[in-house]
Image (cartoon, rainbow, N blue to C red; front, side, top):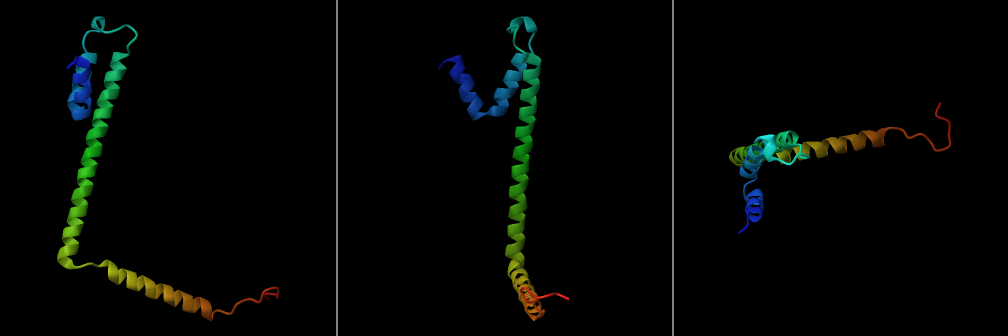
Length: 112
């Protein structure tokens, strides 16, 4: 397997390790890098990407934990949503009765 295939496989298998190795390579002495390569900024961008990836992963884990806790609570205490839906439906019925009880202005007539 060639070095390029190794880098490609590592990139897809473990982005964190790949980015660490790339950052180290970009931070080595400038004389070992092509002159037209902005190695410092590329290394900074890789570090930012790495941080974002970690934060996104942490956020996803927290979201899963939050949903699992909610599911556990709902399982232990019974569902609450059905009562809220019923109350909401009763409120909507009340609003329709009030609306229907209000006198309607005649179309084309004066609303004095």
